[in-house]
Length: 152
Image (cartoon, rainbow, N blue to C red; front, top):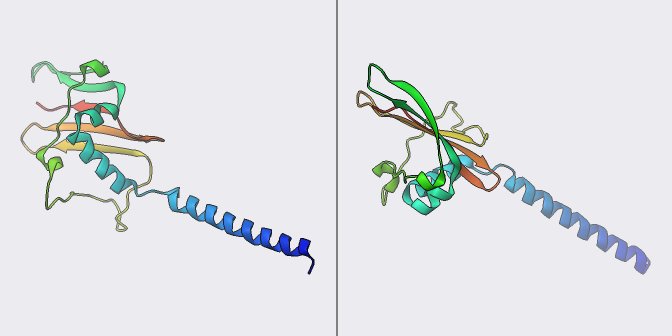
């Protein structure tokens, strides 16, 4: 073999290794575990006021019940950043030890759809609690995009 053909063979092997390495890195990052990622995000969202305000798309759509029980109506407004009040969440999100999440799946594979949207709802039984937080994942992370509070 000539020195040119040896050099050519070495270059082919090097390129093949580089291509395989690139393909494997793309495959490894193609579908992150969004369920786990979202759980970590939500805990930090409720724990840190500065993290929370950075994770809200302002002005935030806020839908709520206005008026007395008999004369209540749905109302909507948009909350600007300077009027935001930190949502502390339940004590559940401040877990220090023996933490667990209640997760309900709609399939036996225990996997959520990889669709960049999550709704976190707090629905009480006979206590008037009915709140939903709508989150969407953008290229740079999860954000609160809508807030509904129908609690009475």
